[in-house]
Image (cartoon, rainbow, N blue to C red; front, side, top):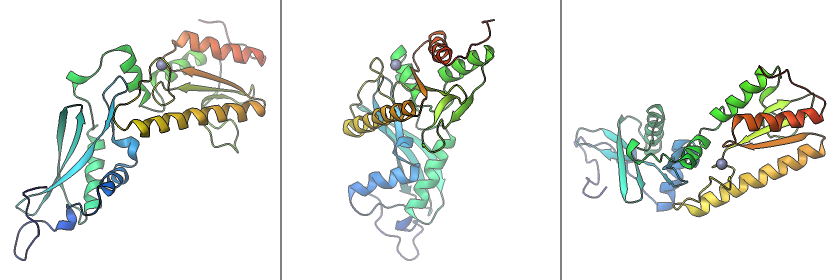
Length: 256
Ligand SMILES: [Zn+2]
């Protein structure tokens, strides 16, 4: 904000400072962005190969009394800026939230095509960030359905345990988790991030510890737990699920 006017003096057409200027420590800059974006995970730009960075909204006052927002992120030495237009809230926090919501509508932050990693590993990582209803999971579900199997989707195996399995066979007591290569730290495809390394290491390690705990609790309650990495081919994933179901006496229809 160097070179911008300092105050909206009486009669000036500049917007009020509270609508755009950041005051306070740098630390606040990160947390206010997290808050406006709806959590730090929403700010992550995935450059493929496990390289990530965080996008931030910048607010700039204009001489005609408006505040203009843009989204900015970097990939190594390159930086990217995408305009988000005029924001209209009275406070900086309100404008950040408005800008982030607009960014989401535009599908930003998005890595430009030329820097899209095309390797198999990078695609796995990107896919991993989509969360629910990822393609490998959908494929697995439809193959199981074709075999006459019926299940619940994104359900809690144990009502008292706040853990959701991707595919649940309540009567056979089989819980299937399709683990994203990035979020669950697949040994083949997870590459540690260079930016915010500690944050990501803690995050992924936390997920893995949680996965182990989920396995333990479910098994102690008589459930069979099947975990497949999202990079596993659908046919192989189907076989793993069928094997677990077979042990519980559930047989599928012949494959079409
Ligand atoms: Zn993987």
